[in-house]
Image (cartoon, rainbow, N blue to C red; front, side, top):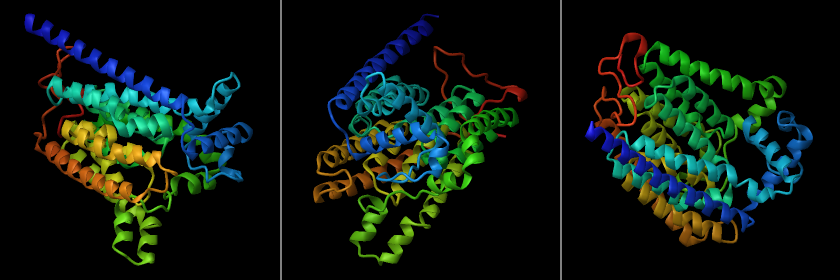
Length: 413
């Protein structure tokens, strides 16, 4: 009993340390948000919010928006923008408000990564990873300065994996998974892997996960799909990203002098091939190691960034928290190198026009990401297939022999 009580106290203290760091990180992000104009996206989101107030979060997809780019955000983002625009009527600054959801998501992600890692590594490692997320230069720059919705989508995706694999709450996991793609469509690449992990947990787990996912998807996406299906499909589901050549495969193709039609194909219809590769990798890993769903979600999102044919500083968010799930070294290396890319990129004249030093540093960051994914996936595969996340002192330990009707997500049929 004495050892058990000491363990509970140790975990509480560790969690408190991460909470303090996450709070400091949130305050830092909001100070940046309140004292900086942000990139062009802040003004674009303000335009979207005004248009949504006029047309509604469903009809917005069917209306041309003069002076604004295509509205490519899922339905839940529209409701969020509508709420933020209403708050401006109370005197709040929209430029500050639009940075709050991503900053709050980073706060939640720091605590979430701590909870995920402490089940798979030492408590000290978990604290380091949680604080790493809170202090990540990538996330501070993209959430506190840029303020897009990528961090929110990533937080929901990691939460879905944690709820499924660690908390044995498949219904809530399905809800979180649906929310992730309803804020930004990027996490769609991890949804098949989550379904496979649920399948490996047994039929009751799969049914509950599917029910949570289908219910929220129908609620959020249903009105737009029924009202403006073609516009929603064109704007959101078929969106391929920007045509800039700043990062990754298209950057290397441009430097190597590949023919223009080849690069255009990569950024056009060919980008779906890279998306399918990410989905296939996630599904395979989930089939082999369903109990490692959080790491698999992290690796799949990181692979999507690695193979992305679109360029944007906010996209660097996709891998930032997840790299800490894969390992502290991987997370720190990515945050430091790619964080410098983000800071220098935002400090330049335009977030979509990188100087030569930033381009070279971005290439280094790409290889750092590739190396981190390689070691992280190796670590996932080195875990025994039937090994559940380690029991922790403050929670009920998993049963050593789960009954058939209550199999955990980590069981292997």
